[in-house]
Image (cartoon, rainbow, N blue to C red):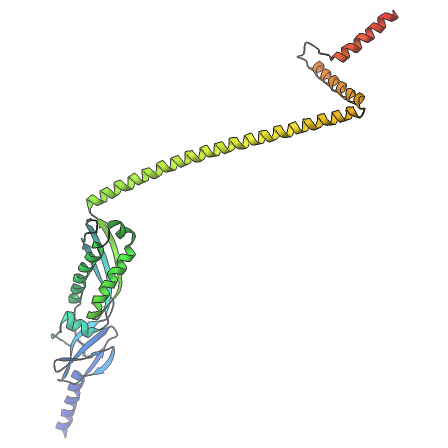
Length: 306
């Protein structure tokens, strides 16, 4: 009985050791049965048949970053550019990645009592992505001129992302983001672009100066026109006022108001004489002819009395 109990304990231990597997949240494990693919274990606790089934490979499903530091494609207008990209990707179907890119990892070791296998490196996956990226980027940029690359970077990113997705789906990989971090033309093109930029700046400066002079001349002409219009309106208003005054005087004379008009005229003349007389710088006193006539009449009357 003791031997049977020991045997059962050993059997349970062996089954536990080889048959129970725990898969972490960030992993997927590929199971083979008698050398052929059987299923993919998702995160959680799983049981496999010892000696018949085995874990052939483990793949991490966390997001990874693959950086392409320097590519040198040639644009449609024959300009060589240096392109740097950053690609974010992750594995969604481990079985496709294992059998189509990474192969089967047969060097398996235990890490702890939970019987977890060693995670396979993603170097093969990155190598496959890198090879695909080189071809896709050269193809997309080769169909685009340099000015289009600089101004339509988002469209190029979208085209590269679509091309990569078509290939990566067959590998069980999902491309989550593609970003072009830098596009640098060669040295000769950069010098030509700088000369073009300087010439464009000078042209804009000359155009702005000409527009400023044109606007200033136009404003000056508008000011002169406005002044002339106002002066003409003032003269017109003054002429209308004088004409009205003359018409009033004429009407008054016609209505028998000549003595009143003559009185007002003499009153104005007297005020003018008084103003001239009070001026210290005046050496000559000017008198109206009517005043002189009045003085003459008074003098003749005085002489006749004597």
